[in-house]
Length: 425
Image (cartoon, rainbow, N blue to C red):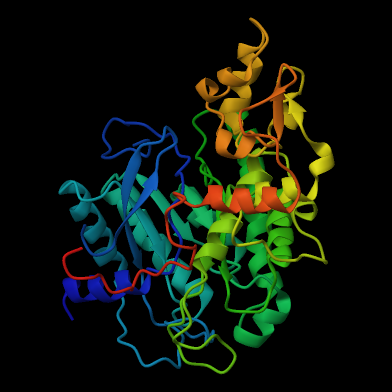
């Protein structure tokens, strides 16, 4: 099998790994090395640098051979699929060749479990060591730490990669036992804790000696599959909150389950991926990370799933109408962030603008406030924005309409990447 065939198979096998994240790496040019980490071929995907620029990565598996038999995975050992494997030398040569042709600026490397987690990780380390030491590659590398790998190998991987991730995949331990019996909660969480502790220790070393080698400088992330099991949004969000609190993760990614295999324990093959549910979870994740919300504020046992018709922040506001209206001239930063239609940037602009004078309703749009949502929840100098006097069920209906791109659009429905396109469209 030639290199192009391997690339086609292993890049396709990697497409279910979520990689679209800010790289978080700031390693610039170094004398004697090529590439830097601050900056539509098979295997290419996109991420973003710490300053917001789009960066292209080679996204590929070392191998899709796997000793595990996770029922939801297209690469499971019992699935009849074409198998391939890069040697460490082939993978390093392919990556540096793509870089020199200006196809990519970094690498996103994952793998099936070949023979054992340790043996697979050793091959990944060898490939990255060739890249870093032989080819002097200084670009961004995101590597997957495989659950069950020995701590010594995880440490070596962390000194070669910019970001590490350990995929939890299924939100509950019951789901793991049912669909991924070869994996365990402890095997997944142990490397997460090791990466967190390793980063903390590395920060102390860098404070004493700034040329000390950096351990996973862009942090760690994980991925949760949404829709493969019956876990509620509340369970997923509680787990997400716990991961941020306990392990200081940079990101938790949500991946709508795509039914690629037939199994009685999984959704049928003709079931559409829950893309809208995935979108609501990402919105809620944003509220956890930047808006000061907690999981238990957004959902509870009585309503364990998000309303797909309205975003989570509006759902919270509708359930807490006694909190409103908020007066923009006196509210603190945390209170402003609770208002639908006010984001982090517009809240800061409000605080800055009101130092020079009292704000009026007509000033809000200039500050970036989204009035189609915010007008129902705030006042400026004691006055509501035009059209803002509405309450109760009518308000919920109005916000649902506001969520749609336009009033004349058809009713909201689950989007699909595979809908047929009418001729002439």
